[in-house]
Image (cartoon, rainbow, N blue to C red):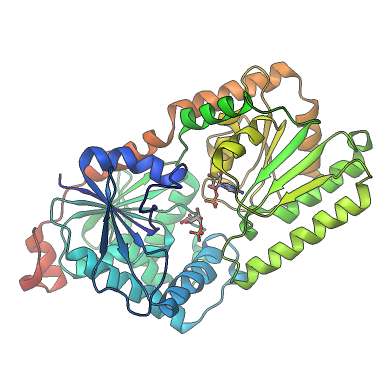
Length: 469
Ligand code: ADP
Ligand code: G6P
C-alpha cells in the first residue's frame, strides 16, 4: 500500500496543539506508521483561496489544508452540512432548511476538493473519508479517474428510509454513498437503515457476505463502533484525581456540545421531576451540565441555548436555596484532564441524546471511574453506545419519569451492583478502544479488491485521464 490519506472537514492543528481527543489520537499511530497525510478544511476562510492543497509538516504526519471563500464555506458548512444533513440524519426533519444554494455549495466543495486531492494521490494510496460533510467525495474522485481504494465512515446516525427521503437530494446521496469501496457505520441499527436505503433507491442486493451488489459492483459494508483512548483517558482521570479534592456532595454530570440532538431540555425535565418527587435529595445532590457552544450561527442552535438556560433558571429558582444551586451550567469547553476528573468525581453520568451515532461521553465517563467505587451511567436507548453498553441504566429520554427513576436508582444503587455494572462496561471498552476501531476499519479497507483502472476509465468515459499513479 502507499500512503494512508485521511480526509475530514476539520483538520488537526498544524502545530499539534489540541490533539488530545478523538479522531486525531485514533489515527495518529496509523498515519505515522504508514506514512500519512491528513487533508482537511483550513481553519480560516479567504477571499483568494489557493487552487491546490496547502501543505504543512508535523513530525508525525503531514497536513494539507483546503481553502475556501467565506460564502462557499458558510453555505457548505452551516448550510447544507448543518442545516440539512445534520438535522435530517438525526431525525429532525422539522429543522431542515432547504436552500438551492446550499446544495450547490455542498457539491462544489466536494468537486473542488476532489480535484486538489487527485493531483497528489496515487493508485496505491488508501483514502479514508470522514463524515457527512464530504459524502460526494468518492463520486467526484472516481469521476476524475482515481483508482485508489476509498472508504467512508459516518460518525453520525443514519435514519430509516422514510426520514432519509425527507432530504431533497436523497437519491443523489444514496448514489454517492454507493461510490465508496467500504462504508462504515457505528451500529447495527444504522447498517440496517443503509441496506434498506440501498435496496429501495438503487436496487441493491444484499449478498451472503453482508455486502451489497449495486450496479454490477460490490460495496463492502461494515459496522465499526467508534471508541476512545480508554487507557489514556483513565490515566488522565487517575492522575488528575490524585491532585484534586472530590466534590462536596454527590453529583450528576452531563457533558455535551449544546446541540438539539443531545436531549438537554429533556434531561433537565427529568432532573426536575426527580427533585420534586424525592425532596430528601434537595440540598444533597447537584447537576453539573457542561455544554459548550457549537454552530451558533444556525437558528436551531440559538433556540436550544435559550430553552436550556430558561429551564436551568426555572429549576434553580424553584428548588435552589441560599446554600444550594441544583443546576450548575457551564457554557464553554474544558481541558480534557479537567473533564476526566469531573467525570471521576461524579456519582452519575447522564447521557440522554434523542438520537446519536455513538456518544463518546458515555465511554469517557466509564473509563474515568474508580473501579473500587464507580459511578453509574444513565444512557439513552437512542445513543449508538447503547448497543454495546447494556450494563448502563438504559432510559427513554422522551419520558422525564424514566430519567427521574433512573437518577434515583443510580443514587441508591449498592456498591456491589455498581461494581458489577462497571466491570462489565469497562471490560468491554478495554478490548474495544479507538485503536481497535481504526485497525478494524483499515484492515477491511485494505482487503477490498482495488478497482481496475481500465474498467473505471471505461465506465466513467475518461479513458485518457485515468490515473494509475
Ligand atoms: P459529538 O461528536 O456529537 O459532539 P460525542 O459525545 O461523541 O458527541 O463526542 C463529544 C466529544 O467532545 C467528547 O470527546 C467530549 O469529551 C468532548 N466535549 C464535549 N463537551 C466538552 C467540553 N465542554 N469541554 C471539552 N470537551 C468536550
Ligand atoms: C460531530 C461530528 C463531527 C464534527 C463534530 C463537531 O462529532 O460527527 O464531524 O466535527 O461533531 O462539530 P463541528 O461542526 O464543530 O465540526
